[in-house]
Image 1: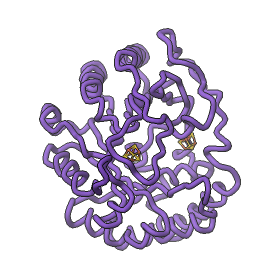
Image 2: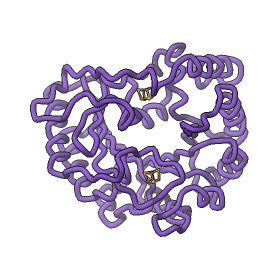
Image 3: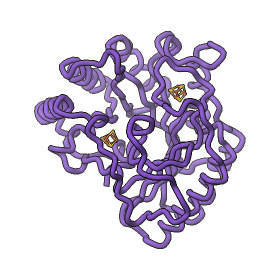
Length: 322
Ligand code: SF4
Ligand code: SF4
């Protein structure tokens, strides 16, 4: 049964990052279609009353480019599913601060914001469309969310270059922003992928740095541990469905543009019985990932037993955990 709906209402973005995972070539979806999808999902949740926490997650492109749609869907979902979550993955540079005031203190409206480092490093990779670095705008957005008492989590893309700046970033988010958690995503470049040894090395060092700054880490790498820690087993395509800007349904955001979609979303979409036929192998990884997961598991057992169970942060970051 689908309990976590991912919506990709637009592939457009106001930023031009060096690496952009959005494969939709800047297409905008039909807002009416997305509203109907959200209404249908909300009705399904009300009728089925699942034990898992129901959630709508916006991703993109930059979802806040579709602010009227986001606000309308969020209002509708919270009205009918008051215990649900709405999670927005955003660059935080165009938050509608005036409209978000209506949600002040609403702990169920959660933002996950991309921040790759302190100013020089972040601006070298993540720029606004006019070429300016986006760091100052991002921090302005982060402070708006903090002032409104809305939950915020940061995600940083990590590679060997950005790792050198990680201690500085950890200090900044802890002392300047008062945050205690950080999600990290390992940078994947098809043309120059990191080896399993490099990936594990980055993660091992990141855990060590984070520990010395009393910051908890999370991120997609945690799903590599599902074989050893069942709570972290990815259930994408059973409990999740993602709709891309064309209205096509996928199991997971990372499959968009890389794997054939399951189907087009239609009014009779079967939320109860959906089972994605997408093959996860080429995207979720194979033996190399298994190796990294095993090494991480050993690291947790030896150094960080607190990471051996799923944590609130894992569920904030992923709707794919059942
Ligand atoms: S903010 Fe996100 S969607 Fe926009 S260009 Fe950067 S990576 Fe792509
Ligand atoms: S289905 Fe998606 S979220 Fe799950 S492991 Fe694969 S890439 Fe990650």
